[in-house]
Image 1 (spheres, rainbow, N blue to C red):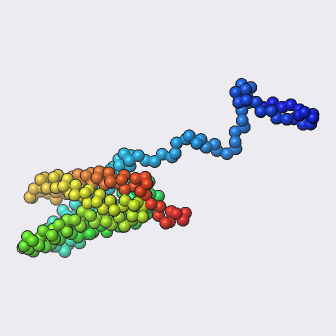
Image 2 (cartoon, rainbow, N blue to C red; image 1 turned 180 degrees about the vertical axis):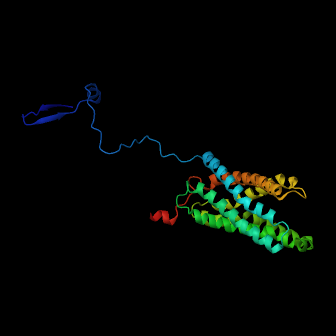
Image 3 (cartoon, rainbow, N blue to C red; image 1 turned 90 degrees about the horizontal axis):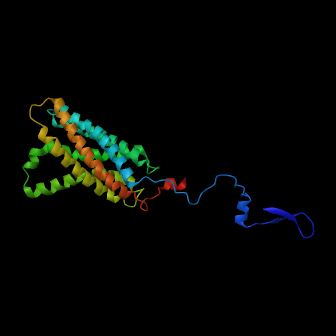
Length: 260
């Protein structure tokens, strides 16, 4: 800008020049105070679905593998114990497995859901795992009696038990996840499909390698190998569903977060 005296000779008057001329004269506006926000700047990056799936797969595979070591080792050590001892050890080991799995899952979920409580997620996952193992030990304790039932009674009981085993963790975790997504019911299906796939993977890997008379450590190692296959299958499937459950437009804001 340039100045000149007004028509009455009193004080300077401001004359606005065209933008091109102002630029040629080297005139620039004074930058505003404080941070400058560029409206064209991109929004903060949100993890892509592939990134979330990859992180979930790595963490949950490791978590389930480590957690499964508890029932794998426990079951090997008490293979010839009484039914009551077997049940007590496997249920305790199942609780440990669920807690470890829940912790590794929660570490990923906290990067997406800031209000998620890790201990709560661990607790419900542990409860779900205990329910699944409770059904799983019944054939060990009452297999002969169950085998004596007529087929028309065995089939519905076996189906109900199998559905409980594969969906128990998903139902337990749904009680927490429903506060964060309007697609939380999909998580129950996700876990059912994932655990079916995981149990198939375990069955394909471990049982063919187990042979009578093997040393306990070898038996446990084979069980751990099967557990790794199960963990990878379960993690991959649940990770694929997770990106849908927590997709943009389907998340909920928990009451605690709204008040903050």
